[in-house]
Length: 111
Image: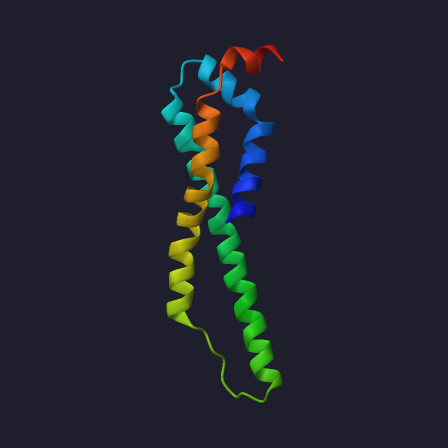
């Protein structure tokens, strides 16, 4: 979670001039916060889907190598992961996006 928050903070810091331009064009800070929260949710949802896909393939390969005769898909765990990963992304993006929305746009645009 800390690593994800650090990654989101550095990603948002790199694009601070873009967000300052968006604010200078008349958008509110709530719009920027929502934009970054949606980005965090989509990034973690994509990572969750890839993790579930590759994890299920590796689980079944492991079970087949141990002479297990059927393919196993833990549906409850998959559903829980698909629900929790966007929530984790929203929480990880919340603090950096609120910090970014409070910054002075004149300093960002002048540098």
